[in-house]
Image (tube, rainbow, N blue to C red):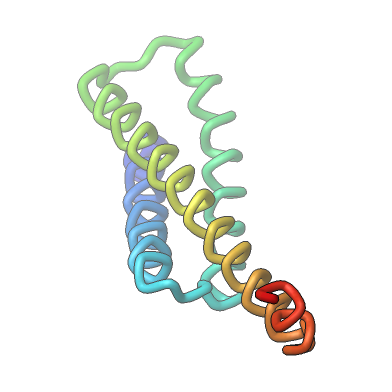
Length: 114
């Protein structure tokens, strides 16, 4: 399998994983550790393949249309990952707020309302 095809396949895997993460976050569920670990592993592979593609690009890409499709897929990946990070941050802040409220004695709420 040539480099661009491996790159495309990896992009598809990452996009699918990010979509799963996105669905969990939309349901206000924190993604499990395995999903986050897999995401990290795939992103590391993507980084490695990106470096290899840069070397190929210097030599001249033979399939410019495929390279353009890959670029578009990468943009979708980056946007979805950014959206997921924002939702994860908001979800964690919400959870932290709930925990903080649980730890406040009810007498303090009474004093606040009086």
